[in-house]
Image (cartoon, rainbow, N blue to C red; front, side):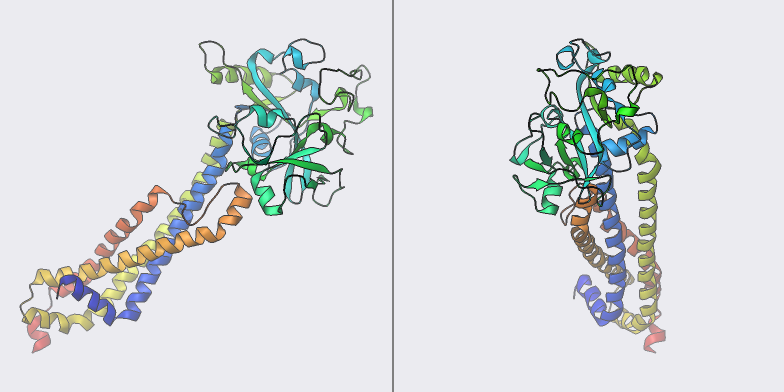
Length: 438
């Protein structure tokens, strides 16, 4: 019989003990796999916000991280609003009522306003204009695509576009209507908006958003700046035939939560250099602040996500080490039972090296079996919680999700098993034949 066959026979003779040992190892591996994959998914969720077609966010003075969390990931609360006049400072002459370029127009490639504060059945409602999906990108420079329908038009006041996860979760289709609520899910119900398009999956926070026409958003109760808060010297802007939404809410009663900004690249200079100069200039003023999403995301990952992932990985690694100790205890406990068998093998002519190799192969079989089962259990666990991850993080995770670090698990487990089996293997190697057969 081959060495592999002898080792397998020994495992079957102690099926219950061997099974418990392999199970403990598989549970440890499953925990490591689930931790690695979910940690990668969390990183992907945050890093996906760095490639949405803008490199700067303009908002009210306050925490830049809170501004990014609210504007990019639709979590946390808005800091405050900024005036419509601040937004127009980033617009070129043909988009402004006075026909003059805004203060920051030369440094701006695209400026998209967003207004927040409403919800629809647990999902954040974002008031914006058609520029959001026409000129921004969903990551890596790729334009937004619609799985059904099209982008809303600025002239169609009560229209909406849904992220893919929202449409899937709430079972909504193009042509259906939604009625957002003010401030919270149990707030005052606003006018209905008709869905004109559903976005294709992007694996970004966009999938969890409900986007409505900003012009219709302004007409809802509680969304206009109160008249008594407008300074006396401010005048209501007249209607302008060349502007969308003309004749609706006066400009000086409008506010925006944030501006998603793609900075322009001057000849011979990268857009990042423009962004740094523009950020410094805006932050020195009193009206607003400028935040760089990539920088804030990196701070968030370094401060919270990475340490938490390392902590979980450390805990799960300790679980695997405990499982390896289980192999040691199991094999040491059975070494006395096998002493007579080992003595018989030696009496039949088996060399000491054969006995040593048999014990080590047995440990390797347990490690490989536990590791493979653990990989399947870990991926199965991720597959089960995948819908929850998709709903809350906006990224896809399933049975086939993986990380390259998984490739090291089984080899690492084999090394641990060999180290754990060395003591009983040496004990078998030194078995006194005369003692057990005398």
